[in-house]
Structures are given as C-alpha cells and as structure tokens.
Amino acid sequence: LGEINMSILVHMLSEVSLESRDVDTLLLSRIDIKPSATSAEDCTAVERFMFLARSCRRVAFVNCSAPPEVAIAICRSTSSLLRQIGQGCTVAWESLAFPSWAEVPAGGSTDFAASLHDLSAAIRETCGVQALQSMSLAPGTTIGYLPTCQRHLPQVLMATVFIKSIARRLLGDSCDAWRETEIWKRISGSQERFTCQKPLL
Image (cartoon, rainbow, N blue to C red; front, side):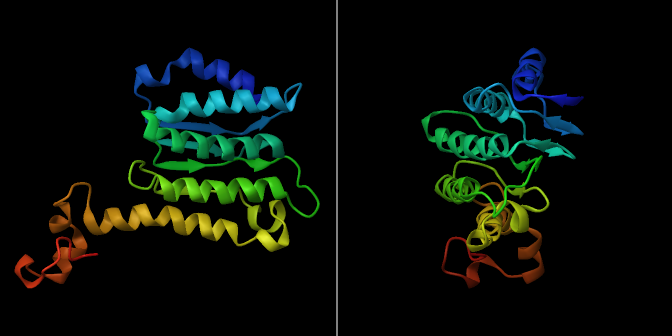
C-alpha cells in the first residue's frame, strides 16, 4: 500500500466490514504509516482502527513502520480495549504484532515505557476474560525505543502474556479439558491420586 496514514486505514477497514465477514486474521504488510495533520487526529484514528480490528483473532503489522506517537497510541488503545471487555466489549485477539518505528528518539521514549507498563497491567487484570497468547513487539524495542532504565519492560510484558498460553496447555479450554491434555497423558496419572480439582496446577 505504500505510504498512508491511520485515517486511510480506518476508512479501508470500515468498508471491509470485518465483523460481518468473520475475518480471522488482519495482516498489514509493507506499509509506511505517515503522521496525520495533528497528533489528536492520529490518536482518534488509532482508537477507531483497533476497535474495528477487535473481532479478528490475529492482528499483525509485518514490515510496517509508524511514527512513535502512532505506535504508542496503538499500545494505549490495546490496553483500553482490553479493559472494556468487562463492560461488554467483545475482543477476540489471540495474537498481536506491532509496527516498527519510523524514527527512534534519542534516549528512548518514556511515554512508550509507560504505555508498555500499562499494557502489561491491562493483560494481567483481564487475564480471565481475554484470549491473548502472543504479542510481538517491533525489533529494536528493547535497545532503541525504551530508556535504559526501562529496558526490562518487554520481558515483563512477555511473561504476562505467557500466563495464558501456559495455562491453556496445562488446563485446556474447558474446566475438565486438562484430563485430555498431552502433558497429563504423559504423566499417566489418575484423578484418584490427587485431592486438588486441577492437579496440573
């Protein structure tokens, strides 16, 4: 698609009608996202984009770049939508991949560090009601985009996301599915040997 801004992406998604078409994966490739006239316009467009994409299980920016303010807005919008699940908002995300930055601020971005910290908190708070199992930050996030004292945040975020995938592997998708998991079959145990409800925990 070349160089476009978030408002154009929103317009394109609006015409596709993702929810009515039951789109499983939204893949954006080789797009250079350009800033809009104002940062407020970018933030509004990002919020609308992520809201439209919430019905897709996988959303990925592959070989895409975005201005720092747009990348940060995507992170913040993700946190906001996750917290709205408790208010009845449907979010189907299982996997998210974020765009690279078009420019790297000297010394990293404290705003980005704050948004990553908040995203980790949002994932942890909503762990029981959302399906996120994979989150890919852009290459260079640890070294280039974050201040030196905040370079641990990607690891914190990944550890938070892994809780869901590990639990799913151990327990399955339903309350009794752990009995059919590969790990349990390898243990070759019987339910009678355990007193707890879910022994794999």
